[in-house]
Length: 337
Image (tube, rainbow, N blue to C red):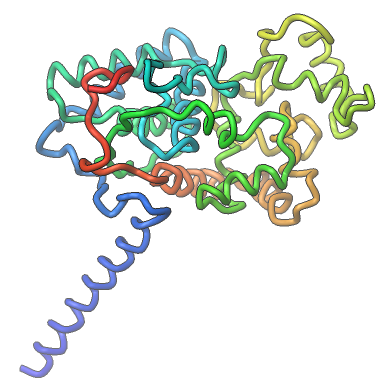
């Protein structure tokens, strides 16, 4: 009998430890992440995962760059007042759209894909799946379909009723950011150096416009000289794409070796002076030992990068999430109900 009692106590303690670990990992940054869990739509919309993936597969088949664009949408959404789909809102008389902010204007893409997913979900499961959750699921599947890691996406976010144009201009890291600026912006969101470096690894897919890296080619430090950290041949190649004037929308891969494959070659390029954006290269050259070491580690070990990227994506997806008292489930992701 005594052994049975001891066994029961051990079982209870085991489940308590699991619950405490889960609670600790799901209660960051002042959001309502404790109410988020991967099975949130298990009974109310069990088709949600399949609908998201099927639309996304078709969209990426038509345009391989779409995976990177949709991953970026989730990132730019979460850094402005939290993961609440505010980036999807069109402007109205009450607020100006985040789409028109400098980090997003003429560069944020994929809104039509989100619209298509939302339309299909509303047809099957009306007023059930939030636009914020769609962004989180799409980001995961975009990475997975590009050869990257899988992770369970905690769900149950609600959508914002307002966008913040001004914060979008301030809170989203710019392509010419210094290493300290990047660290500060990530710290403001409750994210650490390992999150900064691993999430920057999302640049292993996608392209950037000439206007985002022109400064590095011609006037990095206000002295009309290129960035000295650029590898010479890479520098000349970029000059042929991005002239001193004009060609703002000319594009170059963020990862010149495999721009549509999610792998760790992005970090290998940083070691060789082939990071496209200043905000990429300073992870290695910015004289911050922690980020420099992380770049080296991820360049050497793709599995380690994948593991931390998945962990950091879940962490980022938790930033200031809304509950039903503060948010809503939009019928149309572009407008409030």
